[in-house]
Length: 214
Ligand code: AMP
Image 1 (cartoon, protein in one colour):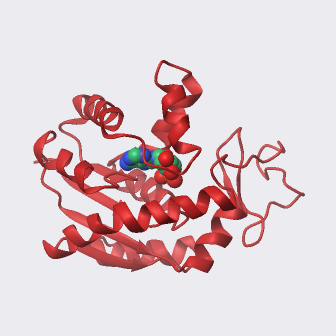
Image 2: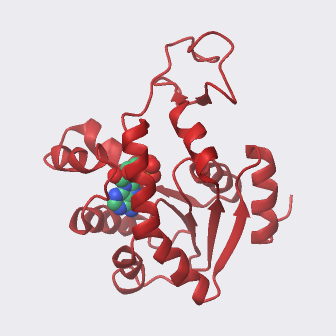
């Protein structure tokens, strides 16, 4: 039976970084809904405009669109161990896992982070459009002013990493994703990781709660 892990947490909690590292290390497939939606926007297909009207406002993209993407992905990965990052973000999305995908969830990790830290991580977050390296102008700046250490190109900022959109994303997280956290807590699947440390420290705690050894 293929394994299913879910990573949950507020914007900027670092779950994407941890998911990419762990999936690579364990040979799991990393399902990153936010990146998948950004790829749909970049491809400029017929749903791109609709998707951007939600992401630019920090709102959740409606269920039918999410459902299509999820179903398409799982047609190719039905037998694989998967790590779900940024999905499910609402109770109706959580139901998709049970009813449509019919997968058992093995563990859910909540990356906990306070509001001040969320703000610092998101407002100062930059990425390299060339190689994807992620920086933070406050806590992990590039060597040269806003240029990638690897490629030398000028760093970019995600369009939704602005103060007003962040406020909405945090509100959406509290209202729609926290009930998902509670659902998994109630059924005993939730493991909590303090995400305030640096990436290496958080990775260490993550492996501990998942019982994965070095
Ligand atoms: P993220 O990269 O996880 O921060 O997601 C960026 C944006 O994509 C979110 O603010 C939402 O607008 C959208 N999004 C990501 N995941 C989902 C999801 N599971 N359901 C609906 N919208 C999503």
